[in-house]
Structure formats: structure tokens, C-alpha cells
Image 1: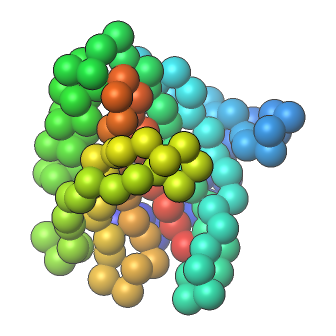
Image 2: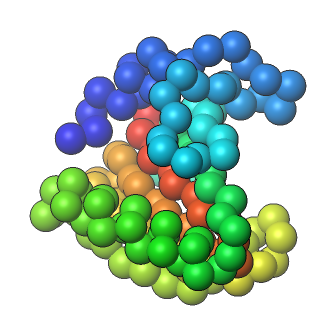
Image 3: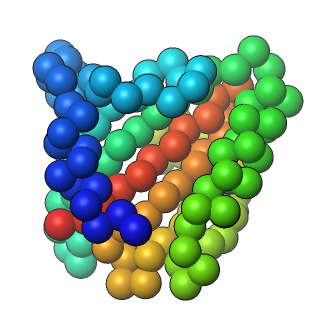
Length: 129
């Protein structure tokens, strides 16, 4: 399903911003920011390419609604042999509590993650090299 994503991600890139991410010409509805960036991986993954979108909602309940909507749409698209799970965890950079939903291809070559924390929602689609 996501085999061609590395090339497809490269195809939607535009100029690099000062923060090292790349603005993209494809923006998901209502997203505050979407970018394509290099994803640092673990030793088993190496590097990858990541398509990232963020939404800043007006309330925690609106963010939760956006999160649930994204997850329900992805559950329809994700192949049945991918593993999925949801968990509560702490954000590495801020220490804030987040709810994360994960879908991972067998062999972990590609993954999709959706996060919600307070009023923010993030979608990360990663293709590993």
C-alpha cells in the first residue's frame, strides 16, 4: 500500500524552510501545517521519510473529535494484516500526556501514527528506507 510513498513524498516537496522541514503542496483539510521531513530511525530502521500534518483545534473535545475521525478513516484504509494499537504515553519533547494510535505494516517498513494532546492533533505517515 505505501511502497511508493518515499518517491511520492519527494514528489510533493517544495522549498525547505529554516527548520529543515519541507513545506508540501498537499495539505489535508483544516491542517495548520503539513511537511515532508527525514525521519531518524532506530538501528533496525535506518532513515525514513515522513509526511506530517498538525491540527490545532479550539478545544480538547474538538481535538478528540478530529483524532477519532482520522483514526476511523485510517482503519478503513489500513490493510487487515497491519498491527494496530492505541496507548497513552508522554511526549518525548514536552512531557505532556498524549493518546497515540499506531498502525504498522508487517516487517515495520511503513507506519501510520495519529496523536492527540490537549488541543493538538498530529498525523505521521512514515516510509523507512
